[in-house]
Length: 236
Ligand SMILES: Cc1cc2nc3c(=O)[nH]c(=O)nc-3n(C[C@H](O)[C@H](O)[C@H](O)COP(=O)(O)O)c2cc1C
Image 1 (cartoon, helix red, strand yellow):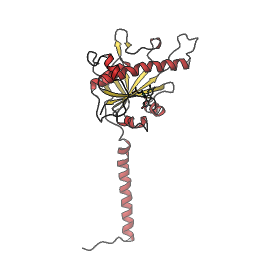
Image 2 (cartoon, helix red, strand yellow):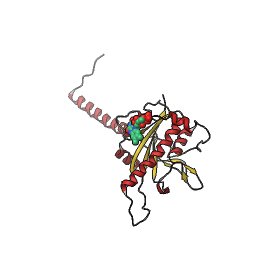
Image 3 (cartoon, helix red, strand yellow):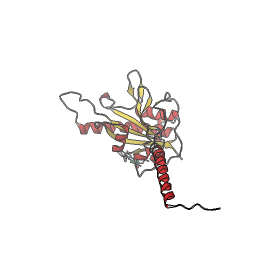
Image 4 (cartoon, protein in one colour):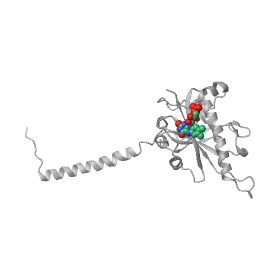
């Protein structure tokens, strides 16, 4: 078989064709790659009514509470997601709208965000539902070093909002307010840890998070403060 040699003219044609193919492939492949972290998860996740009748006793759950930093590649059950969000910030007295956790001056100014494979969601305690604020899988950006959070099914973020002063003539002391916000978030974290222990799930409170990246990804305003995060997953 006679091999066709590439002449200078043919070579020029070939390189034009290769370039065109490269540009076409780039145009098609690159956007697909850039969108890879986005998912088609639902915009609203309506959670089932939280179970309050089963699980370990409080004393058993306290006995099992510990930090875990290794998780199986498995999803949480819907009822577990429901229980965890309800424990974090849910309403336990519908008649007054008061919640599972205590709070300063009865003002609920801490929002809970759920970072999952399907995006970033904000918890709505009244609807007991999650509303998506970003379709991006933010998990790999939470923390570069603690890689177990990159695949764990759920990381909660606790974000404080400014509160109005009790008396308009006396402005809120920002340091005191921040301390109060941290204390309230601590009570929320512990409830989540107890539900996780009761469900045989692993959990870890995590202060080392990229707060600025999360604020940007979740569309927070500059008045909002990322206080802490908490990762939850299935134990290996
Ligand atoms: C405010 C706070 C921040 C924390 N931040 C991290 C963190 O960024 N990464 C981590 O692996 N553990 C973190 N932890 C978990 C502690 O390391 C852990 O609670 C401690 O070592 C005691 O272990 P135990 O929870 O198993 O009892 C944090 C805990 C708290 C209360």
